[in-house]
Length: 86
Image (tube, rainbow, N blue to C red; front, side):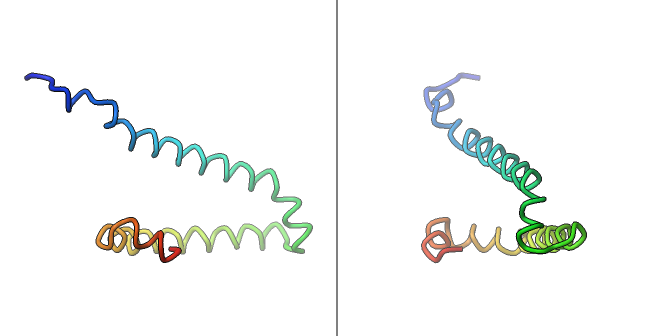
């Protein structure tokens, strides 16, 4: 097996780095929501149970929508959904 220049090109790592950064951002986002939860609850008047219900229903909707939107975005291409604001 011969390694060619195309196989060892650094650009093959760009998607991996992008996914790692997206995962890190998602982790930080969730940590910030956990830290800010008391302030958000106080300002919106939500109880802890109401606040958890909001996140539960968001994640249920997100889980149901992913198998639907993923193939649609794959079919349409990435630039069209970005242009439409999806």
